[in-house]
Length: 152
Image (tube, rainbow, N blue to C red):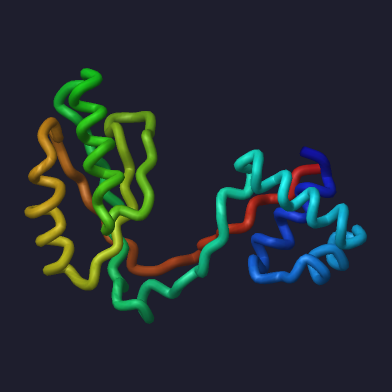
């Protein structure tokens, strides 16, 4: 991936609805090479897809919980089942495997504290192998970005 590919990606991260003509103009390419590069990035899986960025509060999910999970055991079966259940759970938007005393960090969106309690009781508590659940709630957002830093 070269600098021009990164420029294409940065432009699309700022506005995924750019036409190829506008994209080509922004990155100083003619339309045909720009389209070829964009399609190549898509085919290689560098660009995984396009989406709308939605305001959580306006959508009705104003509560963000950051949930740290520790597993009882780290056998293949326990890990595989936990990760499968995480992938199937709509309220979990992000799941990171982390270092430290916990094993996973989840970002969970819910409508309110009662919704979070229901999520824990009906979703997390039903996943076998969890040793502990430690939750924190975000009460503000300082920065949230989908745009990668520029590499030189």
